[in-house]
Length: 326
Ligand SMILES: Cc1cc2nc3c(=O)[nH]c(=O)nc-3n(C[C@H](O)[C@H](O)[C@H](O)COP(=O)(O)O)c2cc1C
Image (cartoon, rainbow, N blue to C red; front, top):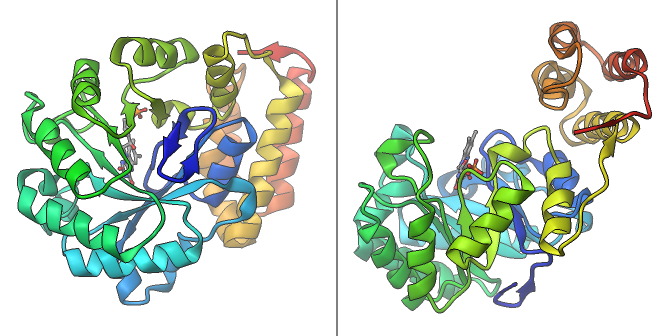
């Protein structure tokens, strides 16, 4: 799939996940064959005001390219100025958040609030389009209700404003992440759009990804929650879309991936912060494995990176490395 000048192969995208899709997480997805990785949402205001914490979210390396960085904000001029900074930071694609339904964001007029203010949405997208040269995308929801009419309208507005692709998460603002994603809306947007459409929502396995493509005709699939602690899913989806079966993930591979994640996180945020993060994040990777609750209990005590590495190695030794899982 092409998003403007960016070539996305395979057509599989890591969804933006606030607090999760930082650089080390994205690198894992990339390592297992994800076609396009996406940053967490980054505040336009934070960038404009020079927040160091916000700028750190833009950190990238060549290895993860192409990378999309997502901005949220409500003011066209501020978001356009932020987009210039994001482009300078190395984004290959810039995505604008039209989907966040968190109160704190919505009350500022950003996120899904933009779906009920189409004039502002258009002004914002046009301002960003004029400010940057990299491909531009927008990630939308169904809208404020489930009918999907707002999604169809905003998709049209977005296209006219020069976006290069539209990602659709077909849940309404009030649904949050509850209920089911209405894939039929992805099909309706695809039928109307002249730019590529990225389908998102409730993909839990490779079969779901293929099914979404077949049922909706979308150009690419986007995976969020199912990728947490499961970067292997990208290899499975890519293989399935090629009509192949990915080899099962061995325990050795799983252990090495976790070790890699620990080290990459330590070099990204420093050892102290990384140790703290590992107390919960390592638990993601052992879901469904034997003795995983005991492992999750033990990692709560992590206070250094060598200790985290030791715990991972001891756990996998106990399980007996080499056996294929999942
Ligand atoms: C913890 C979490 C954080 C999220 N953060 C963002 C975000 O920063 N930007 C965004 O557009 N969507 C965000 N989303 C929504 C996801 O990108 C995605 O649209 C949604 O989870 C549905 O896809 P899934 O069923 O594959 O998870 C977030 C979702 C979750 C669960």
